[in-house]
Image (cartoon, rainbow, N blue to C red; front, top):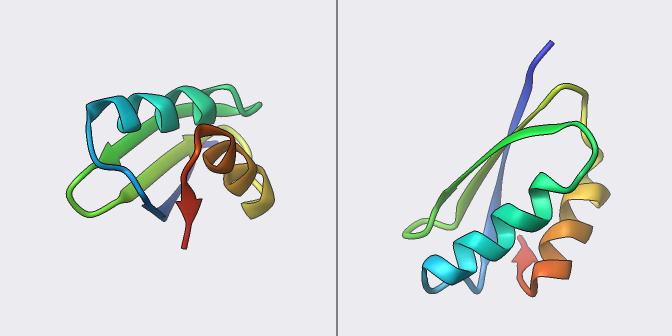
Length: 68
């Protein structure tokens, strides 16, 4: 089973920001893919289980950004 969810992340301004968010989200248990669109702040997370919003928010916060 593959679950996909999209979040809006604010504060990202460059490729390094994208890398930081991707790295933190990839470390969340069950995450199999992360796709970030810098221009819109859209972050699509694919996982093999349903992720709790708090897990995603915690990872994005750890990277230094905010889920809105």
